[in-house]
Image 1 (tube, rainbow, N blue to C red):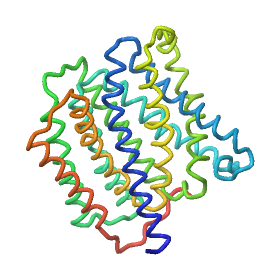
Image 2 (tube, rainbow, N blue to C red):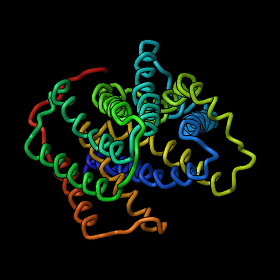
Image 3 (cartoon, rainbow, N blue to C red):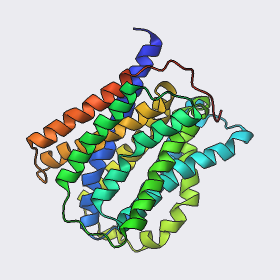
Image 4 (cartoon, rainbow, N blue to C red):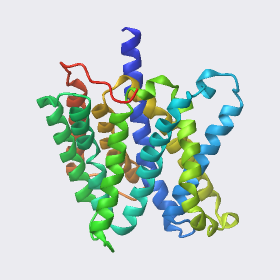
Length: 312
């Protein structure tokens, strides 16, 4: 196996780990929010601020290492700013606010649209062809996600579903745009350097919006379980999870990277069953197989055209 093939497999493993970490974050976040001590907006601010601090602290231990403290070109700062806004501030912020207005079913369906949006944007701006195998894979995977989502969540209410759905859709559009627009740019910097500055910028631009909600949290009254759950969200679902994104982008197509989000409902279902708050059924088993098949077809799809560069 060549070095390049090894990197490709490592990229698949990295983005799979990230999505499974985010999948487990769903029941963990729900556990935190059910206590009522932390609001969704406060949790979002804690997550981004905690991630930024962790990136900064780790970087301090390796002041002269290129991987941790690679020098950023002056002309690239505006691109990193856009990356931060699109992938962290807008994607996380708009989604959490949107969930507050709509119901979990609609929010999950909006999240499942990311691979479709990514595939379309990649076809338009990068000239990645939409092959029958790639299109079929996205459709099959989406079917599996819809079976899982619609079959597991019922009776949810929404105060303003149109507004909430629009915000959730915009959040996924921002993520898809990031996967496509910055596919070539992110190869210029190490994954750590890129995410370090993206989170630090988001801590400055987005976290101030969350401060009023964060100040309402009585941190001294939080139990050890909540602190452990917050540690998981910051260390695994944020720090390590987001490190996997730019690494995977270097070796996989935008659609392949985004397709792994279909594993989130699978991971969330498995975690719920293991935690005793969910059940597994034949229908969920079929849905899981459809998701695996969809990701397999997309990854097996080959491109006969050379992708056009966008932002470098």
